[in-house]
Length: 179
Image (cartoon, rainbow, N blue to C red; front, top):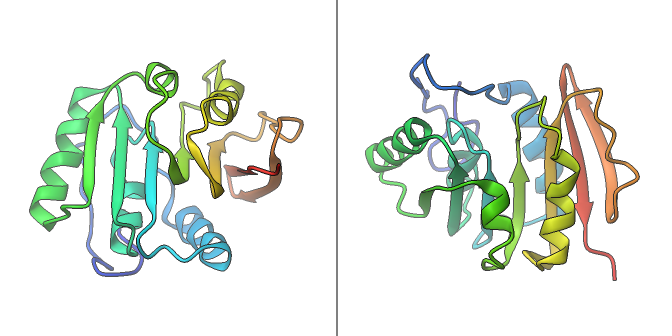
């Protein structure tokens, strides 16, 4: 696993093997960031990475110029890994928070330019993520919500859905506030 481009490009990430994660593949991550670069300028943007796992996506956003990245995960080992790695790379823009994602989404937290969610593929409440993000106004008007999911999940009927992309076994659904 590596950081693809930006300030920290080509840095290799070696998370412990005992983390309960399913990291986004480098190919899928590169494709995702190519799509986002065509839609947004990352410079100065704020990001929330839900179910952050290894923090690879969070670190990619920092590397590519985002000013404020919040990585959220419920697993303390994941949070420790993210904090330690961010510290070793001197990524002051990255904050790791241990918290249940659904609890956080109901707290009416700050709003973000980009929200990325990579929940466990077998999670039953995956469709609630977008609902809570938009109900609680967590996404800024020009921002994007991206949900990574398995092929058996179809989010195309959810409010604010705008696009779906597939890269191998990885699927991304994109949402944007239209109103």
